[in-house]
Length: 326
Image (cartoon, rainbow, N blue to C red; front, side):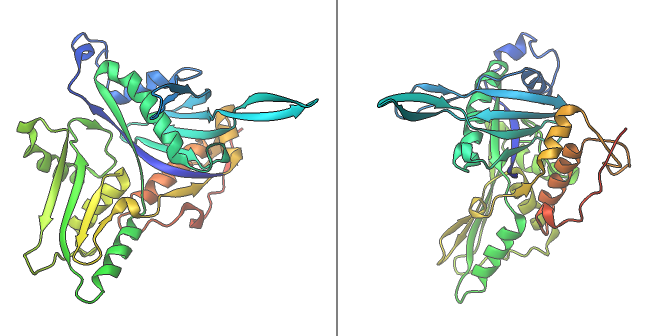
């Protein structure tokens, strides 16, 4: 089973009427999302761009444990069968699995690449984003779900273009969220502090998002070198959290980090079943304590996707030897 990895953030909007009434009871956005996921089924829908009519998508929240929710999201397809010379239209509901890792400071989502949605996990992402936004809007929140991309692919593309004759980087634009209005941002504290400093410059405008723009001299070029730690951390921050980077070349045009390969990882079906059944694995986490193999898998994915220098696929790592807990 192959999953595409996404990062989500819960962003405060300007409409916070229910916040003022105390309906959040002092809880954070992640706490409120936990409450939304503590049900058997979510109200999932997608509004048609053509007709404006919503399509409802059946789903089941299989299990929520330790801040991690495992669910199945069904598609809605219609089949035509012919029996006794008559056509019969039937509804089919093939499904894919979705993992929502809402542990404090994480905000990670994994969506199965399934034939149920033609192998396009972004279709499921769009359903979840619209549906969860509708429920979070009542408490002055919205959700943004963005695909993680491989950091190495960004550097390889940039460096390949810079090796070309007469090629130069004219400008680079970084887009990112305000850490005081969004949670969780998955980055080291030092990087978040840098981000907070940049956003403080735009607070007077009330902006939810900011841009950091670098311009070269008229006939010069920007030096993008992954060996420069601060620059590498900024690129890693954007790739790991799905923020946009736009690199403007003189000849090549504009390259966005979204053009890189999305982060995708394999998982064994048995790990999903053990999570649902409450079967922990011995020596599953770094401290040697019993934990769910699925949670350990999520930790591994997070570790790989936040590596600023390389983002090797998880299947290349030495496999853990999980033992079932008695």
